[in-house]
Image (cartoon, rainbow, N blue to C red; front, side, top):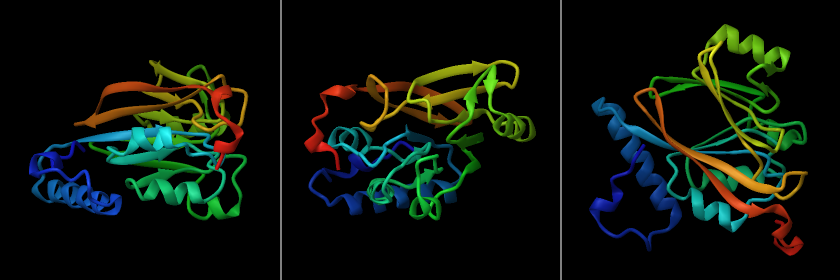
Length: 210
């Protein structure tokens, strides 16, 4: 959802929680009035307990944040919820405290687009068995997973969907670069997709790991 808050004045000095509440109010006002809206989505994965200030700076304008698993410590979920409404699945490294706040598989619809998100799913031509079954059963327009730490955006012509893996924005793993994705959903269509490259993982000092 593209917010119109800026047109009302300068809210840069307001606390973040106030801005989040204003986004919620604007979102529900649009729902009630049934006016078509676009939503700005941040898609990230594999934080592994690290959510750097560089990530926070990039995602402050999000209408929703989606996390594709391997969250790490549950405080990561709390910090993301302070910024925008959060949808998250758990990954193979996540413990009980994260699992009780997330799901293994999520299937939902936003602005006419059906989304399926899980942590370990594969990609077009090389899906894992269960995700492939759920894709066939639910026919999403967008399939999201993480786990590989490799940013990937692919069209699946056979299943008529777009696959996204945002890579890893944390510092633990074998990935060379820290990445995530941002895009808009407007009337069932994905628009203005862009990859955010946070630079080499090796440049993160150990003292910055939170």
